Image 1 (cartoon, rainbow, N blue to C red):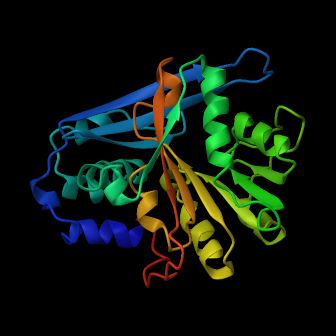
Image 2: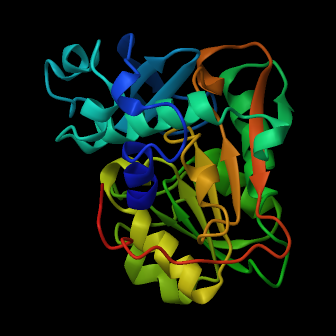
Image 3: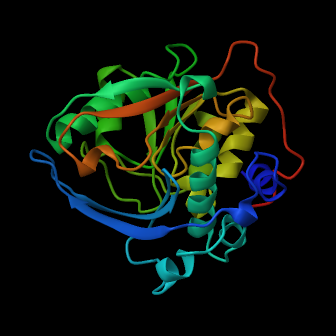
Length: 279
C-alpha cells in the first residue's frame, strides 16, 4: 500500500494526481440486525467521488472528525493522499485507482452477479463468493478471519473449515465463539487468511500482507474499503480479492456485482522496500 501511494504521487499510473479533483465527499452510515440473528452492527464509510469512480474507506462509527468531509471537496488527489487522516488517504487512493484501473476484464476482474434479495440473502450470497476464493484443503484447514462478518463465518462452517475470528471490537460470534482482538498473535496457528479491506484504513493490513508474502499462505481480501487498491497487490502477498465498490450490497435490494480477482498462475512474488512504512 505505501508503494502504491508513492506510485500515484509520482505519476506512475497515468493521470497527474495534482490535476485530479474530488467533486463529492460523503459519509454512509448503516445499522443492521438481520432477522434470526442475535446481534447487530453498524457501518460508517467515507466516500470520495472522482469522475465516475467512488473511493471508499470504512471507519469506526463516529470517529471521523467534524469537517473532514468538507476538507475533501474540491481538493486534489495529491492533497488527499497527503492528508493527516489515514481513511482520507485510503479513500483517495481507492478513488484514483478506481478511475484509472476500473474493474474490467482487461484489468483482471471477473464479474460475479449477486441476486436481488433482502439484506441477509445478499449477505449470504456474497459470503459464498468470498469464501470460495479460499483454496480447498489442505491449503486452508484453519483460517484466520480478520473483520468478523457472521455470514462469512457461517459459510466457513458449512464448508467444515476451522477458523479463528478476529476483530478489534472483540466479543463473541453468533455461535458463541470468542472473537480475538490481536490478529498477529494468531498468525502462526493459521494456514490461510481471510481479511476485510477495513484493515487498510486502521493500519493493520501491511503486517498481514507481509506475513502472507513471507510464508506463502493464501491471503483473500473482501474489499469494500479499497476495492480498487487491493487488486493491485496480487502477487505481493494477496492471492485473491472480492472487490465491491460503492454502492455496496447492503444499500440496495436489487441485483449487484462483485468483481473477483485471483493471482495469476506463475506470478512472481515480490517484496516492496518500503513495506514497513504506513501511508
